[in-house]
Length: 211
Ligand SMILES: CC(C)(COP(=O)(O)OP(=O)(O)OC[C@H]1O[C@@H](n2cnc3c(N)ncnc32)[C@H](O)[C@@H]1OP(=O)(O)O)[C@@H](O)C(=O)NCCC(=O)NCCS
Image (cartoon, rainbow, N blue to C red; front, side, top):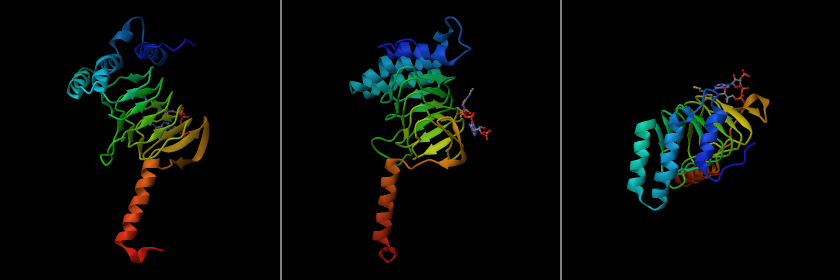
């Protein structure tokens, strides 16, 4: 295996070759994920880190216009990301993505609209997320997990080494062994706190119901 490069963009180039058997010769230069990641890594993210938010967003929106991939300049993305086809991908401001992940078109790493601060998913290393999968909230996606096309996961964590499919997403494989019947995903830490809070509010509004 090749030694990882210090430059994440080099890792992104290698990821195209590694993940797309259709890539030949120099045509890796034509991939929209490479264009979007170049703008993100070399322009938008550095501007965001310098608190130049308007310019950062302007460049990220320009990349979105060209590629259909919307990466918020605040997103933290490890090297070797491959976004196949690109169109319709949304990566929110507080998302974190580990190394060597693969996303297909239509993937959303988004917020639920209810949270403030940290509100987008944290994706581990070597994770594959299939087309049109929707992952919402400050959730943890364990390394080496595989999320099927059209899967929906909201406010639930995905353990490492699992295959998760369906709406709502359920674990159908763990460490490559079938899980039958499929297992529900655990609530994210954030959601656990919210449920406790909702319970407290209910108890104070309806004291007769408290045990
Ligand atoms: C999830 C995925 C990565 C396969 O992972 P895997 O660990 O190899 O899992 P398997 O293929 O062994 O599937 C396990 C079970 O889940 C089912 N399954 C797989 N993907 C599914 C999905 N997206 N939705 C519902 N069920 C799915 C399989 O049919 C299988 O069930 P079965 O044993 O009853 O037949 C793959 O199916 C997938 O969805 N890849 C996304 C690829 C994509 O988006 N391509 C777009 C190209 S343009």
